[in-house]
Amino acid sequence: MKKAMFLILPVLFLIACSTGKKAMEKGDYFSAVSKAVQRLQSNPKSKNAQSVVKESYPLAIQWSQDEIDLLLSGNEEFKWDKTFQLMQRVNNLAREIRSSPVAYSIIPAPKTYTTNLDMTRNKAAEERYLFAVARLDENTLESVRIAYRNFQRVEELVSGYKDVAEKIALAKQMGTLKVVLEAIPVHSKRYQLSSEFFYGEVFKYLNDTYPPKSFVNIFSPDQAERLGIEYPDFVVNLQFYDFEVGRSEHSEKEETLTKRVKVESRDTSKVSYHTYKAKLKTLTDMAKSRGILEVHVTDFANGEVVVNERIPGEFIWTNTYAIYVGDEKALTNEQLELTKGKVLPLPSTQDMFVEFTKPIYDQLTQKLKRFFNKYD
View 1 (cartoon, rainbow, N blue to C red):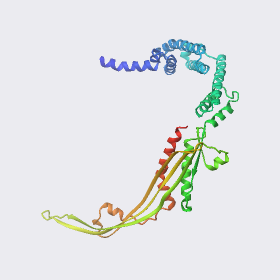
View 2: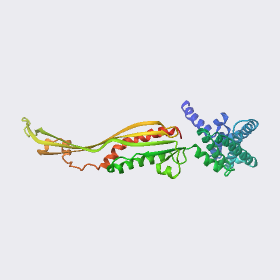
View 3: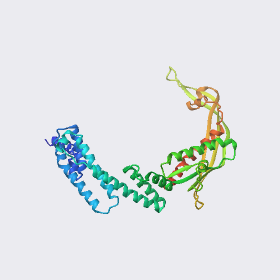
View 4: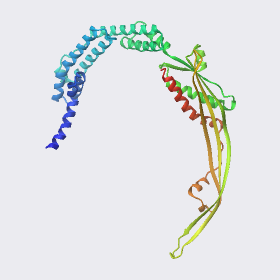
C-alpha cells in the first residue's frame, strides 16, 4: 500500500504543476492561468485546470490593475512603457483563454485593453523619445548608445514616430567605434600573395565578429578613404618580420637489422632458429617556416599604443621514407611501412607561409576580439 502511495504522489504532483496550481500558490497568477489553459486544450475535462482558471484569472486581473495604478500614480522611469507591457500581458491572457472553449466558457468576457492601449503606447513612445534625446545631447560614448537602444524601443512602440529613424541612425553613428585595419606589406614579392591572404582572413573574421549592426566597425584603409573616415578611433597595424620560409634539411640513418625467429619442427625435442638480416636506410626530408607578427593597436586621438604584441608562428613539414636490402622479414611492421613511402616534392613557399601563419591567426584573432569586446 505504501509503495502504491509513493507511485501516486509524484503523478499528483506533476498534474498539479501542469494545471498551474503550484504557480497559483506562489502568486504567479498569469503563469497559473496560462498553464491551466494549456492543460485544458489537451484535457478539457481536467477539474484541477478548470479550478485554476476560475480562481487565478480574477486575481491576475486585480494584480495587474493594482500594478498599473501604482505605476501611473508614481514617478518611476518609463512608467508608461511598463504600463503598456502590463496591458499587453492582460490582452495576451485574454487571447489564450479564447483559444480554449472550456476556459472561454469559464471566463466568457476576458478583459481586453483597446483604446487605452493605444493611448498608453503613444505616451510610452513619447517618454522613451524624450529620454533618448536627453542622452544623445550628453554626447558620451555610453550615453549615445543608451540613446540608440531607447530610440529603437520607440520604433518598436510606434513605427515612424517623429524623426526616430534619423535619430537611430545618428545615435548609431555617434556610438560606433571606427577601426582601421592596416596591413604593412611583406617586403618580398615572393610572399606577397600569402600575406595578403592572411590579412584578408583576419579582416573577414573581424567583420563577421563585428557586423555593421554592432558598435565596432572594421574598415580597410581603402574603405576608410572612400567613406571619408579621417579620424578613426583605433588603427590596427599588422606586420610580419624576422621570417623564413621553406628552409630545407635532409638526413639519413643507416642501420643493420637482425631478427632471430624460432623455426617450427615436427620433432618437438629439437629447437632451431633462423636469423634474417637486412640493411635499412631511413631518409627524412624536412622544411621549416617560421616568423613573427607584430601587432600594434593605436588610439588615434592621442597616438597612444594600447596594444603592442609579438606573436610567433612555426610550421615544420616532414616526409620520412626508407629503402632496404636483404630479407624483408628482418623489418618490423613500422619499418616495412616506411619502405612504401617515396620522395615527395617540398610544399610551395606560398603553402609554407600560410601554414606558419595559422597558429598566429588563432592567437591574433582572439587577442583582438578580447580587446574590442570591451567597446561593443
